Image (cartoon, rainbow, N blue to C red; front, side, top):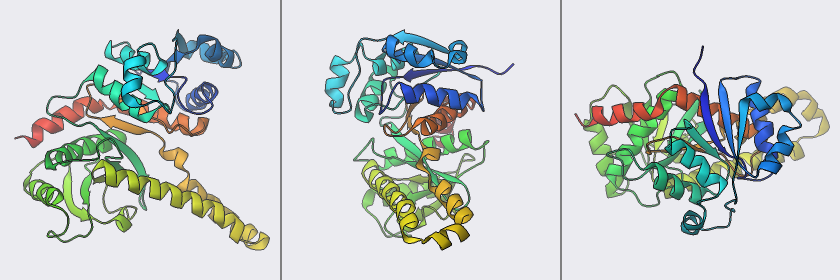
Length: 334
């Protein structure tokens, strides 16, 4: 019998919660029934949604919490005042080994601060990073950091490389990834001093856990020639938001620009293209570098996007991501 993955969910975080949380769980169970969910939040509101889908009761347990961290609360304020919140209690349950992983669609800054406070970092890692999935011509890339760290040094970028490669191997059946540094050019002389130092370090490192492929430019992210793209959080977040905006612009304006006849003739191609760019399929940023895994779902995603983030949680736990990261750290130091 397969091991049950126990997921602690901040059931009040994000738009349209807890309804989308419950709908997302229901959707995820259609393809995978190996998960058990601990739902932290307002018991009466969660129960109201569960009562509409009574089959979920055997997969869920509600833990009532007194408060919710709002999206407009500052991270430090949330950390000080949020000890009775659904987000805090969910992460705390993981700290106490009652759950394997935490999932929230709530306040990103608060989630980062509270996760670091409660779970602490893996030895040797001083800056956790947010990693996300990115569509490419061949399959999917992992990219990090997506906004957790505005300023990074070469040690941080090396850590991101190690953690990103471990994540890729966890999600894609232990395939050894090709790793690239995001830069303003592909020549070794280009870029700031930090990225050039990181390049030199990675070029000299010998490891079986990833292959270093050098620099990659922003217009090559989706070419499919690399699997893990490493950058600082400032650059990564801008790249992410630009890509999301471009994808939304393309899918919305294609419908407007095509007339009815061309829409009919190109329906299947357009549908396939739209599905390829659907951000819900890539929902879920992973906070790497802590003693336990934490996944951040996009606050505005719907239940389908949330179901994809549940699937990601399952893969992360099943593949022992944290142990992979620790093993990779040891390997790179020798």
